[in-house]
Image 1 (spheres, rainbow over the protein chains, first blue to last red):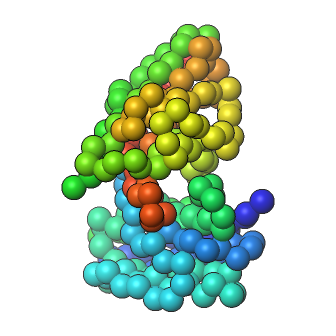
Image 2: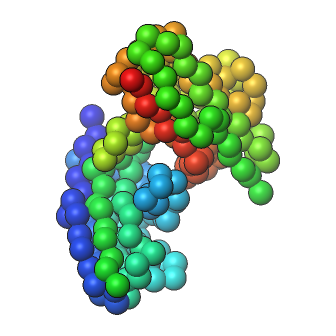
Length: 108
Length: 112
């Protein structure tokens, strides 16, 4: 089945630093989504990005489908960015496979 | 705008007791609905999905079952809880034509 690897598993930043989160997957994905999970558990969709580059605010997602990888770039990090970031892949049907997540801590 | 609600917010249950978790989506007709489970500190695992009323597909069962009695409602249940059922349960929806999934606030379950 589909495998999704995220790196790093955890990351600690000082406020204002940038972060690059990676997602690699084992077979071609037709759909890819990035999520942010609040420390309290709420899961929020950041990007639906099966290919190309998308921006929203300080976040940029780039997916290179034929290389089976995606990245999430966070610029000028803030303490409120702390939480866990997941990428999730689907290559057919309704089954969504999540990576292990990157736990981000941003210190003031 | 679409809203998704889950109930209860949290539960503490005994091993062997029954469980029923609910999810309702408002503002979207004929959504695709999904159940996920997350162990503490772990990743999310898809359990079930439903494309239409009365139809539920199992992805990973974990001794749980799901039903969709109404277009806007998805229920997760079991007759006998196990310790391994503890965790965070999330319901999600997607549009009929699109695939992007949107998640509810979740239910935290502790089995003692």
